Image 1 (tube, helix red, strand yellow):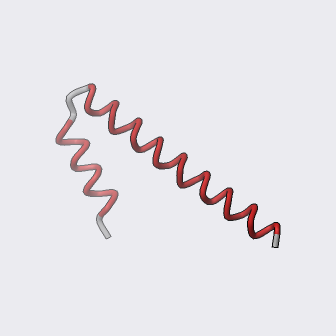
Image 2: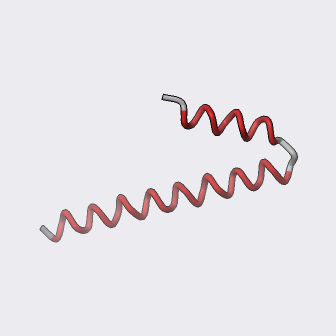
Length: 48
């Protein structure tokens, strides 16, 4: 059971880290005025 909890914590940490990375990339793109590229990338990431 403890192994399952550890796996869950690792998965949660990966999701949080991924969200932070996406936020940082989005901020960098906005700083460089590549708003259309950012929106296009965001649509591509959320496309099924």
